Image 1 (cartoon, one colour):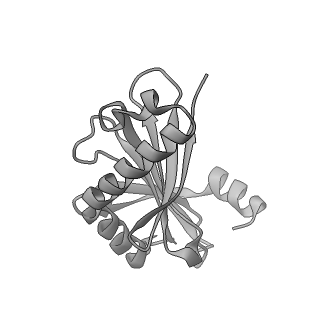
Image 2 (image 1 turned 90 degrees about the vertical axis):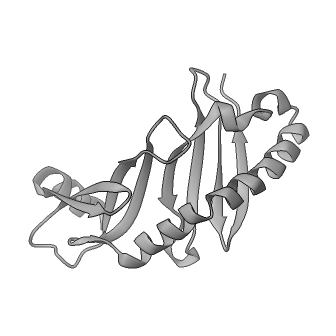
Length: 158
């Protein structure tokens, strides 16, 4: 959707909701005269094991998130233990490489998934960002694609 259509939709669109069973309610502003446009649906989801909510975005149309994206999201969540296992090894290695291993040493207790958003659509992946649960500004993100953690990025706040 172009920038003009996006602004117009934000100002004059009507908010719609879509329930994804087992996850929650996703919302989107939709223009009734642009039913065939592509829309971004968002939801605040409380994932198991985490006390804070995670923002999840999915692509779709005026009727709701695309069924393929909902299915891909469920597959991602089913693979969560595999993601954590892969992250453990990668974070340990990467944090030592940048001399920040004390920040990421107990990352599972310190960080939570802040957002899960679709990666570039043709890549069929997800970008997942983790932030600290305390007031410090450290975070990391990665792409989950083809059942692998890829493109891990560490950022240390000041």
